[in-house]
Length: 186
Image 1 (tube, one colour):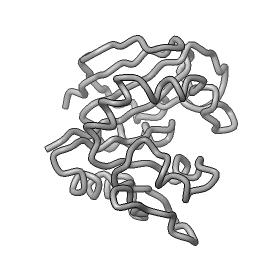
Image 2: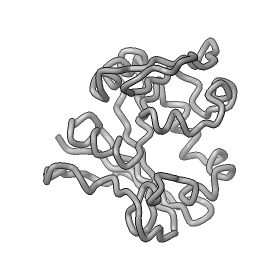
Image 3: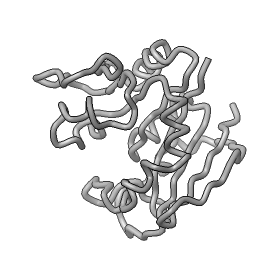
């Protein structure tokens, strides 16, 4: 059985989103990132993806995800509402909108992933929810050399829970991005 991987990108001062909830400043290297071994390994080992409605809604045209998203796997979007129009799907990329929480979305994603990993696309809120619920096996953090000075931090509201992690890997990527992998000790 695969692992549940929680991934989040943060600024040097620990923000996963700016004060408007935008992540653009954290991805100045998106085209370069797509060609790295780190992302390619994640794509190859991922059997399904979990994301919140906010991450899903970042696509200006949800129908464009089917042909352009890196992860061509079943996607589980946890939300309080389903979209009015179901987005375009392919034979590999499908959408399931889960209205009963992140835990249910992860359980459904695990079933769909088979022996591969579940990758959780983490915003500040998603990361906190996932950690509080104890859903992740690994935490992958990308650090971008920028200071946002304000915004939303992913580890700020984790219920004063003591979480132990073991560093697995550190990778320096182009554009100053640093990729850190941690095993969450349960």
